[in-house]
Length: 294
Image 1 (cartoon, rainbow, N blue to C red):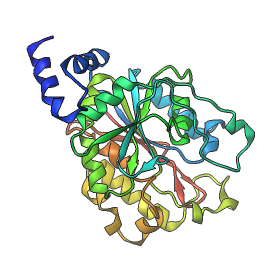
Image 2 (cartoon, rainbow, N blue to C red):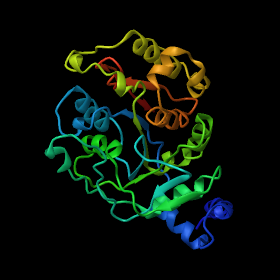
Image 3 (cartoon, rainbow, N blue to C red):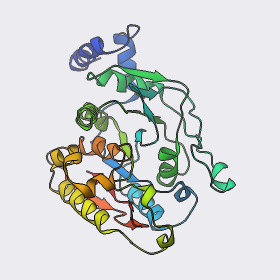
């Protein structure tokens, strides 16, 4: 092992579990050697039915996957895994979780048997010093993850782990925690946030579900401000979204679908430029807008 790598690994020792040692950390470095910086993605996942339907959003996911390097592994922050404290899945084979109801059997029949990565889970725990990250062996891959990743990598042959959202913490906390994941991008890891910018299911106009790009005025106002802030790197306004007025209040009635966006924005480097795709409204009060940081 080179001296520089030894010193980096040694510096991580105070932040890993008591059973972790230099040899184990060296093994992690061997699992994930240095690479060029991977992009980071925020994916607007919308309805679980997008997992089995053919539409413009699915096509957008496939197109973006073709435009980026194939990752060694994936870390996903999904709107659908909220916990007290922060957890990372650490099992060898995560189960496919069907965490929804009232949909066709065909959706419940979907399996996405991608392997997990205990090594990446340990690397993630070692990198984050803002809090203690706990290992989870029960969760798996919820639909916020598999319903979109299956379109990016349909063969389910890339290891995936999930990082949970601590519902007890404010947006600034999530943003700062995400910044500590930056190094993973230089190890061939694709970081994905899965949620929706505008997400108010209670106000959906089901009669307009098939009307292309239909949106309420407040949804347009919120979405336009969000995208303006994203493209101008005005992350402070996005972190403090609760101060942005009534339109944001309606667009983000609860934070879990919005917070994954902050995880991805926090990874942006000064020389990178965010780009939007799937930038459309659905049924008045939902947006599918997705972001690539590269």
